[in-house]
Image (cartoon, rainbow, N blue to C red; front, side):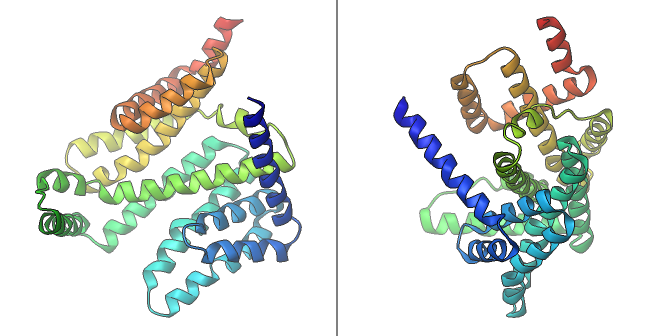
Length: 304
């Protein structure tokens, strides 16, 4: 048991030294950010750094670090691969910067989720305006992959399932980008909390509660999706994401109020990974009920 405690304290010490060095000055921040930008599989760390600087030092300093960190993407784009800069800046670094600004100004994760939702819906809209036949593009792409799998592994893929998924593919891609950005922001807030406000992050994450406005957006998009509106079908994963995250906030808050052991929380996340569609649907229902009835407040009154 003591061995695990020592490992945890060592890991926290490394993170603390890393964050302290990054926040020492602009030169250190830019050097570390650029280093992680060019390292394969570690580009996300540079976005965490952008968010940390923005949260602590504000819009101007965050923007300066952001511009330095996206420099490699600009260079790559100038060599011909313009999709890299589109994905790297709009899909990652700039998105992280905007959400960090929202969190700094509002100190509200609910505002962050709402902003993420609006930006995600805007992204889906722009993709559909830019590529009106985007669903057909996904169908052709999936059929191509299915043919490759059949030729190389002699396995037949049910293309009907792929064609159905193509209706939501753009939305899932946008939702994945949104989720990665939100995770980066949580990590940055955790580092900020470690350096300057110990214990700040957990209460914030456990108090996320969506409003009736978000519930109405989910309802409208759900109905339009059921009616076969293509853009609404693509928007559904984007809306669903923030309700899943709000549902997780409810679960953690209720678990704390009931003193649920960590092993059960771990088991819950295993179930979420294995049975994602069903557990995610349950979390969405929890988030909707909490938006309407404020479950945490009611349970607090019962406990008192």
